[in-house]
Length: 121
Image 1: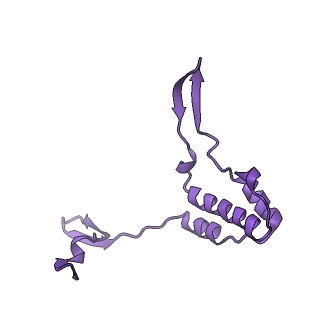
Image 2: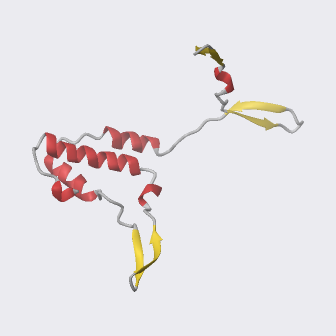
Image 3: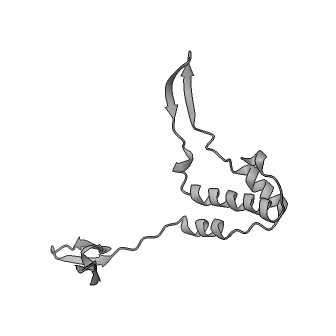
């Protein structure tokens, strides 16, 4: 229980349990813990821990990962926009890690190598 501004907040009221109820053959209810395994987490960790230590590698990463989503388009017919294709890059489960890797590569080029990165933006 927390006390803030003379109001008591009871934490268990706001925290949900991760236990899952199941029934057996007799009809009795059992609570069992739910285990979640995210199979992409090791790859996310590896991409986040990847260090940029080489100028050529930083250039390769900056060229490989685009600054904007290349799939977003407006379909125009006779000057009228008839459809819009939304960016599909955010559907990629590793999107944030790739954007972070590109940012680290660009920061390496600017901070360590002292290069101008205008052509990558």
